[in-house]
Amino acid sequence: GESVGLHLPTLSVQEGDNSIINCAYSNSASDYFIWYKQESGKGPQFIIDIRSNMDKRQGQRVTVLLNKTVKHLSLQIAATQPGDSAVYFCAETVNDKVIFGPGTSLSVIP
Amino acid sequence: NAGVTQTPKFRILKIGQSMTLQCTQDMNHNYMYWYRQDPGMGLKLIYYSVGAGITDKGEVPNGYNVSRSTTEDFPLRLELAAPSQTSVYFCASSRTSLSNQPQHFGDGTRLSIL
Image (tube, rainbow over all chains, first blue to last red; front, side):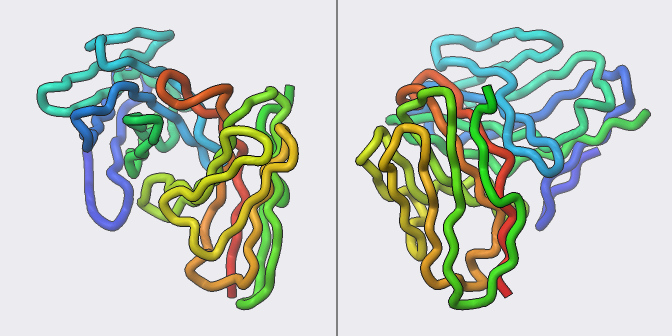
């Protein structure tokens, strides 16, 4: 389930299930969006991106959905694996400035 | 290619000390950035550079300085360390502007000011 507070929102999923991580972005003029994965002790790593003229983009086991009407971005991970355990955060770009979300911690239960 | 390399990985400083966080990239990227990451918060931009010899302030520049004498290197300087600067610092780079491409990040420097 999810919890929000002083700590990062967390999402726990069973290995093999699909994961959906959500992000509400702030600026309706944002035109480019990125999902990053950050493993413990590492820097953020690019997963997938999407431009504002698209509403869906697929990669290998990952799909990003963009709903500009409600300023919402989601990352779907198919067949979640233990190696997917990490913090995931979205970033929006407007006027060459990037705004990062606080992140969601994904925990995969074997 | 090593990508973006940051040194040191960890450091403990006393209040008032100074230090330089090193960052180098081997991708020939024009743009480089310094961020700080505090628990439960998104990355905050400290300084950035669009090319050698050019630097600009980001969202939280106070207490920091940078220089960009070469395309590869973008060091971050703390002159008088304060407890509020305890954080994880990430350096990143991108080939051009951020309007259509992601950034490449180093693995961070974990800094504690005591």
